[in-house]
Image 1 (cartoon, rainbow, N blue to C red):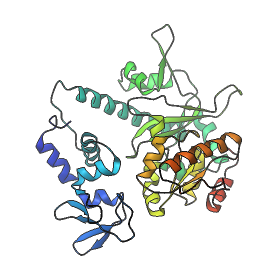
Image 2 (cartoon, rainbow, N blue to C red):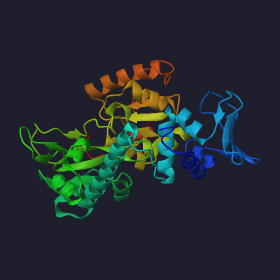
Image 3 (cartoon, rainbow, N blue to C red):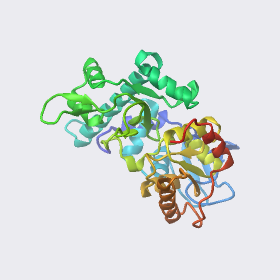
Image 4 (cartoon, one colour):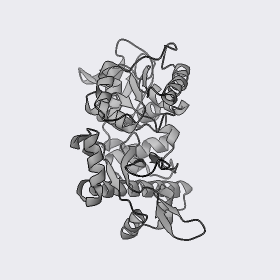
Length: 358
């Protein structure tokens, strides 16, 4: 992207992202004279030495000596390169990036933007189906049975995919989307040996999966009826915007609480997380299923130095907890391999409110 975006556009993005506002979404900044201070996120310290200067629009840690502008902070904190930092800040400021023609990066970015747009639109379509359509009554009844409040439904943007083979296909046509492009989102599949498409998600309660910026990049769908051979959950396949091993459900909403708490709770499923979050335990995330990966550990390490594992008590959950604990220790997220303990009292109380275990 450097060389493909003009200097004027870069400066426009810089000016539209006040460094105090940006860093304040990651760290609890406190005013100190004309500047702001916080504990440095790049090294361990007990006395704040991380300084943010709103006049110069720079940050500087006088402990580890890291410093720079708003682009540098995003690159260092999020472990991304400059093009990605530029894109994230442009998205935050709602500035459209314009690239030089003939760029392969331009084509890749255009594809990702198109996939993000489709994900956002289908999220709204499924939200409407859950809230307003007669077919969504089965999902509304299920949520009521599980004690999921209307506020939680709205906050986590839950939806319902109608139990039809072509609902999403027809929706995509009505929006003017090329079906080949929609296939790349994983929302529809092509029939084997033919040219027609059918829906991946049918008759399911839909959980949008977001990236750390809150953009919908995938889905997890829970079955509401069917025989025992039907998978309880169906997830989006990996796409140019969704890599399962690098995404936590709920991190976009919980990252500030994780920073404030100083540790992250890792639970097993979406409904577990929603129950805890709505009960006030908000420093919590969930991998897709019980698979906790090295990438998950790396992501959490950017925020905290400690994790609390809260998986199911069945054999699969406990085995996954042991594997996750090993990874956490390797990444410096646990000082030693402790025996598996019952969930924290506040977490246990929230999970007991669920009508049935996941």
